[in-house]
Amino acid sequence: MEELQGGLFVDPDEGREAFESSTEEDKATCCFCSFVSDINPQPFDPKNHFQQFEIIPKRRCGYFTAKSVNPDSFPPTFLRTKGWNLVTKTAHNLELQEAPDLDMELRARLLDFDNFSLSNKQSSKPVIVGKWYIPFIFIKEGTLKDQMTRSMYYETTLEQRWEQIFECDNNNGHNKGNVVVDVSIEREVVSLFGGDQKQTTVMMSDHDHHERRVVDGVMWFKSGGSRSSDVGLRSEIVERMNWEEERFGWVRGNERQVSEKREEQYGGGSVHGWKKFGCYVLVERFVLKRTDGSLLLTYDFKHTHHIRCKWE
Image 1 (cartoon, rainbow, N blue to C red):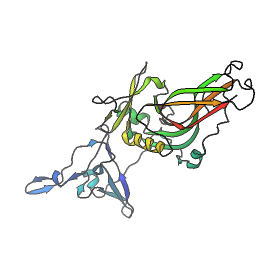
Image 2 (image 1 turned 120 degrees about the horizontal axis):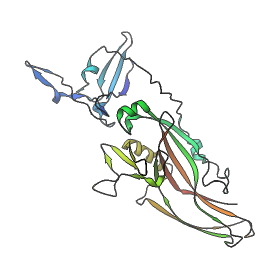
Image 3 (image 1 turned 135 degrees about the vertical axis):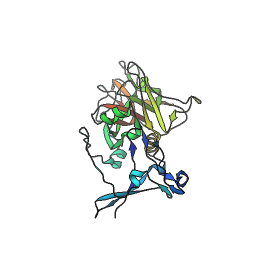
Image 4 (image 1 turned 60 degrees about the horizontal axis):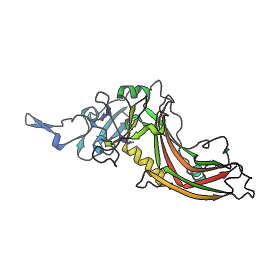
């Protein structure tokens, strides 16, 4: 007998709510007999063990049974009934590719700083170092019906790139061989639908304007401009992103921006030996796309402990 751990059943008629096990306290009495009374679907919470079930296949009989992960609790009737079957149907627009998780070796190597020209680009070409899929239940955009029709999974990739934070020209030797870099760098930046990052804001708490707004375990982002819209990510997704970045050296900090000030000296000899100077920070970006390939969200983390400069 093989048990499938952690099954989740979502009620399609109740929005983003999940079926939940009942307890002894939920039992009802009729004609001097007690019986299990199902409770109504509750808001989805991946930390709630009452919403998790073990699915047990009876191979010889060709049917399934289920029990609650949480001891001394009872699954809803349709799961509690012994001998139920499953009918599966593949969505016509669901074509998932291989998601190999994180390439630790490639990530630690850092992408080549010399493979792009300072004269042509403000940032290097991104390199994908990780790939996953996130089920729709962890993301909120639009109505549930539209979301399930459009994208039941979201392709998530982690990219690395070098992003320019400062540049200057030599001005025919006027700058000589010294360049002073004095800039402010935002630690993290979010963009919705590929729009301007400056028009995307993290919705803040109504009670504390220094805390991000989390409602029912969902962190909300708002896009301004002509296409005003909101997108929500389950806090578990945001926490995992932060954890992944922190273990790679990213510092959360108390301030949204970090100041970077340094003086760079040209080591090529003559002050006329260079034309342009650029300073770059390593950026890791989570990219979330719908299954139709359209962009939903990008989440940038600036690794200010990885800053490099180049002269041309």
